[in-house]
Image (cartoon, rainbow, N blue to C red; front, top):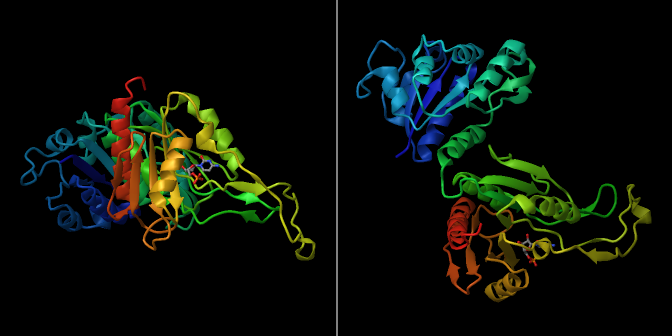
Length: 396
Ligand code: C5P
């Protein structure tokens, strides 16, 4: 079981650390919490004790039962250290090597990677001193989960609001995934649906939520891959450590994919690309009375089919009948290594649902019907198959 030391410092965002501790344990990690004295004024150590089932370290000079020698054990025992929230004061101390509390002493004493999730008033965050300290820490290999631009508890609106919990957990997952089987592999993932303009405000689209593709980017990142996400419009948060290019139309997605492919070793096209587009979209909003009764359409290029060369190609097939046969035809025509077929006529599968029942069809003819799984579990299964494909394709 991998070990995380969660350091909590004295910001109002300390209350969010309970959610983070809980999220870390749900990821199957062994979590040991250390708090600065000021953090204990915002949230009780007992909260973390109950969430992590470990005593909480709050004082360098008071040995913690079962932990041995305080900050040194906290530092040595960790696979990763996460400080969340991390105050301007703690950032300054870490940048200078000051170690006068259990959290800063643990960081100074560790060889483990350190992640900081800053949270503070905007002026404090934007202060050149804080920014220079963060630059120093980044140069020394610290990972910073940038705070969000939002309304802050102090009444100001600006940057300084602690990042979303999922992004902070994503940073931990990414760091723990370094050295995984996909380390150093550059993988392109497309996600979401495209929108083909009819006029300045209307489009032809589909119901793709993007969730399957986003889950895949995380699963691949967690195994060490460098992931480039090329996504159609969605409301989903970009996972931590994943680079994203936003696109709207199929032609734009094609251009971005073809630009990325030369440096990529694999492409996973989960995107629901609209197969046709209006031939002559209007650049202005067409008035109701002027709207034509028919719109002429032209086919969009098939992106996967255009990708040639030594790259692993994984496609998706959303089908409502003869699922396996139709998907197998696409696998052959698009020259794929693997196609993930799902029956979108099932209410628990496909667009918008949290679950997916998929069948994996391999290039060699092997067919695997997976049970009904969450999209996250499906993403992990597909990632396992991609790891296998890399083992078979030694040239990549
Ligand atoms: O032929 P169909 O659209 O059903 O194929 C689905 C697979 O092909 C998906 O992986 C999808 O992302 C990809 N696709 C594509 N270019 C298109 C349409 C679909 O690459 N124009």
